[in-house]
Length: 162
Ligand code: ADP
Ligand code: MG
Image 1: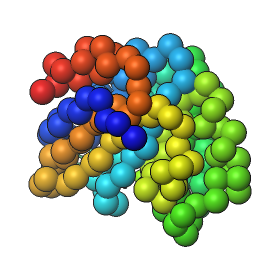
Image 2: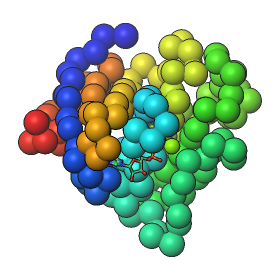
Image 3: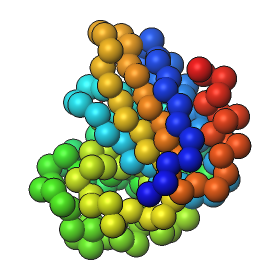
Image 4: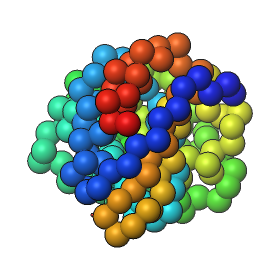
């Protein structure tokens, strides 16, 4: 997979991580698959909370890691699927969760512990995010567009965070 463009962003609070997700969510007018990796507590779910808000998912939904349920679906401007592969053995069989269909659904699909899904099972274009704990309050978020044609979206979105 050729990576086209990459940004490294440091956030200094959960609110900033949410804002990053929200910014992206607000700008999306078609489906997008996001693979999220990083240790427990590194901010993946926090980012998805912002993403949901940007997609106008009702604030009545409490967005938490679907660690046991594996998939949560939320109605928004675009449907949002929040997936957590933490409890599944790698490589995850994508047909078990119906992921093979969801990934091509023109929905926004945010997958925590994305590494558990083999590279061959990812769509040709997706956003790869790696979360690292830098200190109690700061997180490094590396965002890489893989096979996405629209580099400008990322430049507009994340260039200013640099
Ligand atoms: P993950 O889904 O990666 O396991 P969560 O988003 O559930 O992580 O949790 C992140 C935790 O880290 C939360 O308790 C949050 O308050 C805390 N935190 C501290 N600083 C940040 C930051 N800059 N960005 C995101 N979360 C942060
Ligand atoms: Mg989580």
